[in-house]
Amino acid sequence: MKRILTLAIMAFLTATGIPEAEACTRVVYKGPDKTIITARSMDWRDEIDANLWIFPRNMERSGNVGANSVKWSSRYGSVITSSWDIATTDGMNEKGLVANMLWLVESQYPEFSPKGKKKGLAISAWAQYVLDNFATVKEAVDELRKEQFVIVSDYIPGTTKFTTVHLSISDASGDNAIFEYIGGKLVIHHDASYTVMTNSPVFDEQLAINRYWEGIPGTIMLPGTNRAADRYVRASYYIKAIPQTSDVLTSVASVFSVIRNCSVPYGISSESEPNISSTRWRSVSDHKNLVYYFETVKTPNIFWVDLKKIDFSKKAAVKRLSVSKNETYAGETSGKFVSTPPFTFMGI
Image (cartoon, rainbow, N blue to C red; front, top):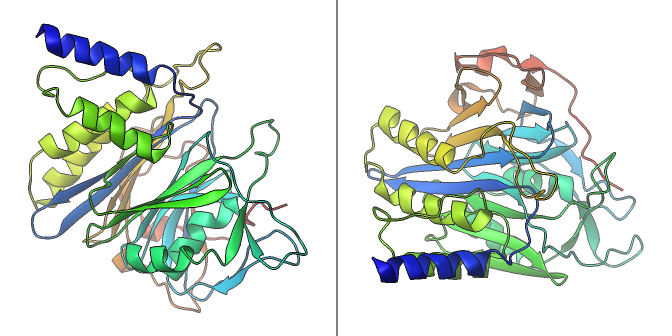
């Protein structure tokens, strides 16, 4: 026991020097009968207006960085969660590909020249670009590795906070990839085993911290703070400890319990520790059954969207389900979305 306590203290001291920003957690469950479920929490110090959107196929898109923007037409329809209706931060497409954007303060993006050879893509549309264009993680990795465009970031409107995020994707086969820009260069971590991601440090160091804690039985001790490194360890342990089942009710409930365990209680904040951020909402994506579950901390119910009930055809309407005013929903809600003009991705 003395050795375990010593190892735990050493790991904590190692982690305390890690810089952090706003906090989120993402975790992937792999069960029997091709049951794959991705969950994430959105943790933010201030209120972050979120709405759910249905985007059909064949939407004409732009990178929104001027004349040198990348342009595309969406191949797949998707259900996404927006932030302030200026960015896609989370979502799943009709092929079961899931994208989650999380904060990473260490991010440094390449320089973008409006008159350069490479096209630009506003960071607000990064996750949407992936959902629009790819059915699997491998497809996305193979294409994004070519770096045919530059990710262009900017300050969050009305703040002095420069947007720095990394992107995780998962698919119906259980494959996973994480995309980070470190020192201006794209770093891709592609492996089916990469089922957990939080914020700082960079993903290589997250893996190293978790390997350290794997030597300490989770039934004896787990780090319990709100820090990203601690949330990573808890998510890694619990996602393997919950029941291995293909029963949807049990598996979804179990995954929700894991992401809640890694959440930050509502109302917690600290002027001296801006990395401590309340959880605002959570999503759980069932890749196999194409169901997107959602809950906010200010409403008492979980609701969900069955993508199989949605018309994603070219002539279908863009629709929105408002949750930014603390609306309460229960059960399957695809029929409650309202036709709404699409939002414009924040550019430069």
